[in-house]
Every structure is written in C-alpha cells, then in structure tokens.
Image 1 (cartoon, rainbow, N blue to C red):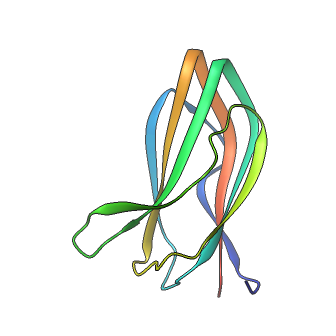
Image 2 (image 1 turned 90 degrees about the horizontal axis):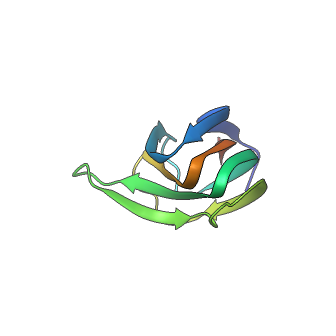
Length: 114
C-alpha cells in the first residue's frame, strides 16, 4: 500500500473498561486500508479484548469485514483490510471481558491511501 494518512479510530492511548464500545469513523472512498492495534496495558483477571472492523451498507446496516486476534495482554497487530469496502463509514466494535475490573489501554488506527 502506498503511503497514506494514519487516522485514529479509537483514541490514542485511551483506556476502555468492561463492556462494548463502537467507534465510527469515515475513511473516504477507499477499497482497502491497513488497521493497526497497539495494546500497551491491561488490568484485571483473565482480561480479553475482542475487536472487529465493520462497514456500513447503504441501508445503515453494519457487517464484519475483519477481526483482530483476541488480546489478553500487551500486543501489536496489523490487519490488511482488502474486502470490498464500498462505504466510507467503518467502525471498530470493541468488547472487553474478564473479571476484577478488566481494562485495556490501546490505540487503534487505520492507514488510508491518499
């Protein structure tokens, strides 16, 4: 992929606690992009972080186009999203699980071609 612009999907270094959060972002009219995950900290007992990348269709429905490997601690991962992204709206659906007040501190971004 050619050099592009890094767009933060979920706040840089933000902490997310137990539950589900969706972060919607426009990426422009692109058919592919690279998503980056950088988990820098986690707390709790058996914490888990599940992240899916979804796109919005013309009828406002969301469908999964890619899934990150479940995080259980600090990690980094890069996903090349080359599905037919025909919408300019994508989101990350993020679910934190575990016990003893699980949290994750991480950045989720997308490198989008110019």
